[in-house]
Length: 613
Image 1: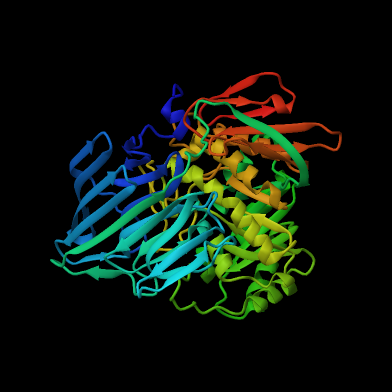
Image 2: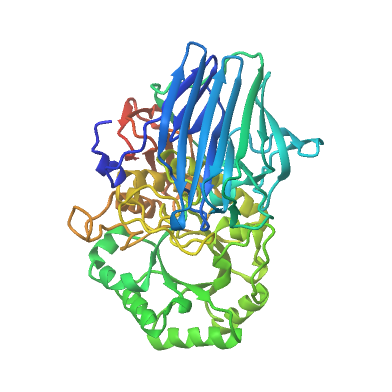
């Protein structure tokens, strides 16, 4: 990699380099004491085995490792280390880990933990991730804690709750003739479908969510947990493309219209947007999404600010309106409509959602008080009878899947996604793109052909449904649930954005919003960045590319290696086809575009996006 790290990631903070462990046909990457990308003869068996300690807001501790010893033999490996988590008030939890892998396909990860004082946590124990690519909907055998065995399947459509509870082991087929059993000891485990949050995995985790949390680990009481992976069978090695091979891009059938591209505008960002109207015109979004939240103090002046921008950039507009739902619904929404009229804000649509629905209701928890959605939407329709009405969740697909809106009252449904709910490393963020087709397919199964919008969806988290607040990130690190992410200012975000649009294009969205115009989610630089304030970030080019494709007919793009390169193609009425390629990796990738009418190979640089017309 020759490109400057800051240009790629918006930060020079480097991720810890993985250590590749091998034992016969099995391999795994050791990253910060946990295992990633566990393979057998090149086939991914598990995405991760990780010992996770979470705080009361579901933030993840990242303890420094001590006494780390890695022993890589000819046909086996072993790892030992110690670690310590320091919680609020100086509370401490220490643990000792051992990992052993052997050439007979056996992997054992054991952790002995000891709270040095009472230690509060939402979760303390193992998380095991099964990949979704090639496994979604496939048969598995689940052994329960009572000894019963269930032959079943991993969910194909995204399960809103937990597909399996009270788990002791789960077995799946790695490839014909080879199976993998994952056995968990030391506590009761259950599985959730992490595709709800756009994670590309099924997660088996410790301690049922129906039990109270946060909970306290008593001082001096030791805990032991063990995860054992056993791979059995005899089959020919899988055919895995070498990383040096060119990725071949081919175009296929035509599909739905590519969506309008929106940008979200917050009241506090209007002044900066008005000062950059020529740049906004150059970006070319088809729609403006105006955020409005009376529970955060937004009122008439916020709507007047939105009206000034709508006058300066005449495009279709939607008001993203949070509804407090604390009194008379008709009075509340009629009050919003009156302020819209007084502000002179022209609207083409309004999307409404109760404020409490921005907070997640996990399994086993009581649903918060909220009027029936039918009543909320009926009041919104009475207040805004002449424009389109949308509903859904201003949080994530998780919440929409768990609280399904009465779509027959709506003109469109909407939700967002965020790739750093559970993990914020580069690999996990890019892998989240794999989950997006499952999200859109599940939404289409639930809501049929109802017009469908996604966004605002950005790498950074704009709100935290799972805790008291998003995480501040003043040092620009890779932090889960952070309200700012340095990669949004780098080439990484541009590649992620094109990849996102490519993954959701077959769903036929009517609108896709993947950025704001200014601010921490914006396409322009902020004052604290080492370039002139208001300069285009790399994601500007990506959003501009999507704006160029908006309204064209989607042409399916097949990549021979979707983990490295994705393509998004659109065809005009005149028959011109435009294709954008995104390199999803930190390496140069050769790309064979001969099927697109080109007689040469491209080499796409790390996280670069490339236009082919």
